Amino acid sequence: MRVLVTGGAGYIGSVVIEALLDAGHDVVAFDDLSTGHRDAVVAPARLVEGDLLDARAVTAALRTHRIEAVVHMAARSLVGDSVADPAGYYRANVTAGLTLLEAVRAAEVGRLVFSSSAAVYGEPASQPIDEGDPPLPKNPYGDTKLAFERALRWYHTAYRLRSTSLRYFNAAGATGRSGERHARETHLVPLVLQAAAGTREAITIYGDDYPTPDGTCLRDYVHVSDLALAHVQALDALARVDGAEVYNLGLGGAGTSVREVIDVARRVTGREIAVRVAPRRRGDPARLVASTERIRLALGWAPRHPALEEIVESAWRWMRGSRDMGGARRTPQPPHAPRPE
Ligand code: UDP
Image 1: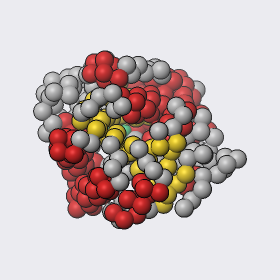
Image 2: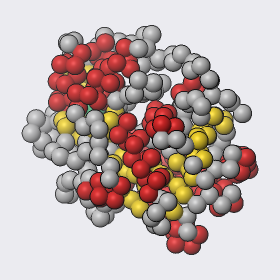
Image 3: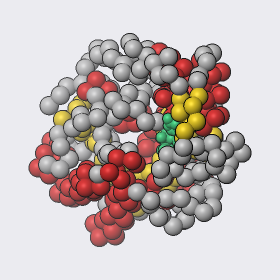
Image 4: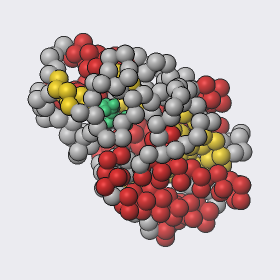
């Protein structure tokens, strides 16, 4: 299938493109390179550099490349940022999303997979979180993701656009080719590994007074390759299933604490990791763990790298490949570099 991946030059986008290529799809990335990297787009996928708010450019990309399905991953995704700049988040995640949907209608593309987030749930009372639990986002980021999911539901009813929204829990890890390299890193796994590498003095634990076994927050970490696999399977399923589906994308279980991540990183790297405990970060729920029955049953999704060791080790390998150990890796150009347009 010919697939357009918005946000394809980002961390998760580049891994999803790898998985789509492996599955035999033709891929075009659409990205404004505001946070992504040109060299993250895996060849032979092509990069169209453009702004999703530019309806004509998006429609032209869909038509020129005769796109049959869209994976919509382009977004702003930092919770704290979204509280400070809701206007920017609604513009990037909702207005641009709806512009994309207009282009999708105009170009008669019938299938779409959407990167949603566990942030749509807010702070649910019961865990693990089920897709049937009421979504009550606690920040603009989660609200923008929910708004787009809701639009998808109505677009299916009215225009028969088939879609799957994947509510990500905590993506981490790397492939041999692609990994996390944010200019401003906020995520736990890369920050812990920077502390192990010595490019960061210590890892700060945001709160150790939560009602959890060791007092630190519990999260559901998924290997980014497993996350990517779910997109490929969701796309395949849209050939059979006429609907607007929503699935959690996490491993389930008891969840992993911040301290457990640090301990695993110490084992994997064989390095000392200094720890500082700071007050809680605003808006952090004590526990966010997915119920994963729905995606396993509906898509047959089964994670191939469920062990936290594997996730952390892959991220460490990726980071060690970088020049400065800070994650700002310069990836060598593949033999067939992506063709910018
Ligand atoms: N965290 C932490 N120190 C950091 C970054 C994150 O203690 O420097 C904690 C954070 O409070 C949360 C967990 O690690 O409980 C995962 O945070 P991350 O930002 O990676 O993902 P989130 O769950 O917020 O999407």
